[in-house]
Length: 181
Ligand code: F6R
Ligand code: ZN
Image (cartoon, rainbow, N blue to C red; front, side, top):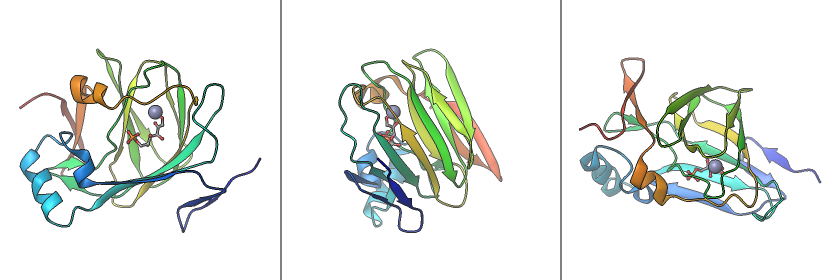
């Protein structure tokens, strides 16, 4: 089968489920909770959206999705996805499509960061929780291809963090320990 992505419209055809994550959906994830509350009260902006292919999330299938993270910071921390662990440890592939972002990975001990630009393939090995971050001034989009039976565990990140956080610093970025005050 062939699936067409319309970059301007941000849609897949044929399409599967579409997901929109607003600031209020990212409760407990930004370090500066006061800034997060202010942003929720002040229009609750869309932080990212995910359009999926119609391939089912079941064992042996390879669903795909395209995530677009809008540019922005909350309390100095770059806008990002919630992040998750795949409970059934399996690998995943990302392909940068537009904008500048990064792939943060954490296995419970070590942290890895991969700069993502159009054409970059980011590989997430089995057992590494992952989050995507927009570190640019344009929307950052990437394609994800993942095993349909891997599952998605969001509570893992709330409990274990992701090793580091990514902050805007001058014109660049800085990393700080996830649970640092
Ligand atoms: C799928 C995957 C991506 C993310 C998407 C949104 O396994 O890693 O498609 O699901 O980038 O991020 P989350 O799921 O963390 O809200
Ligand atoms: Zn994943």
